[in-house]
Length: 277
Image 1: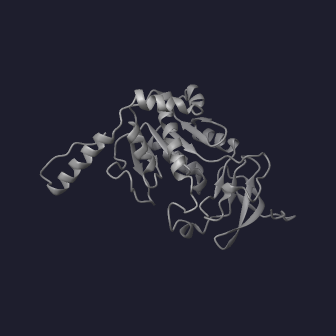
Image 2: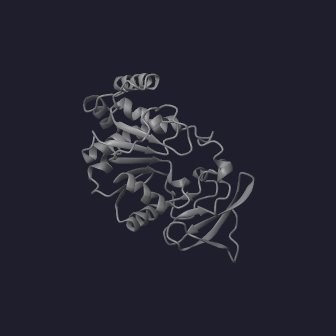
Image 3: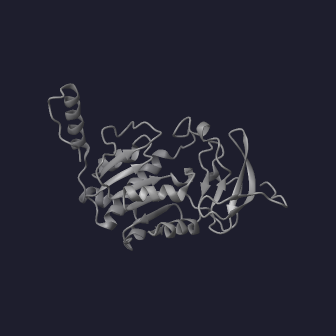
């Protein structure tokens, strides 16, 4: 870890606006990038990220070897969140949905999920992009650490759906994390901000919404009262298997019929196709 200079530079915290203190420098995509830590809300951030165009030449970085396992786990988390709120028949929008893995897994299980992503091609959930309808739950998995202005962007997510389920790894210690902490990800340069529980609670307070967390990586911002059951369900995977088998009906066949109908509509604009759901 780089030794902190006696007269360390500071950078305003992008969460709470307080002065943030220099903690270390890391090589990042050929640059020496400074990291700053806020002593008020606990947020750790890079200097202003001028390298993002290079970092996002590919929306999904090639070091993300956990992408498939993570989406399988997240499908359970989404379904159990809907269960906790009594919304198994609700509509879900997956923000920054990447290749569409999670949306396809959720629809396979029986959840009406839709995809949106500004930067990535929808490869696996084509035909089920977000529409103008209302949504009960928005998911944003592995997104927060990419945001330049977290408070404003989480606020925008809450305008799309009143319940926002997110994931991001919390800084594991009260002390400044080691500069070799794997989640910093300087190799790909896409992670620019890192949270403690206090940081996320402060954001929720700023936005006037309820907040809950598993204390590690899964967090919930909600305009509705958060059911006590939610925290329990995040740790019991077998409930997801039960719900998927007995409480939901897979959309695999219905989606196939919908997509086939859409092909007919595109081939013959005078025909009509039924909407998926």
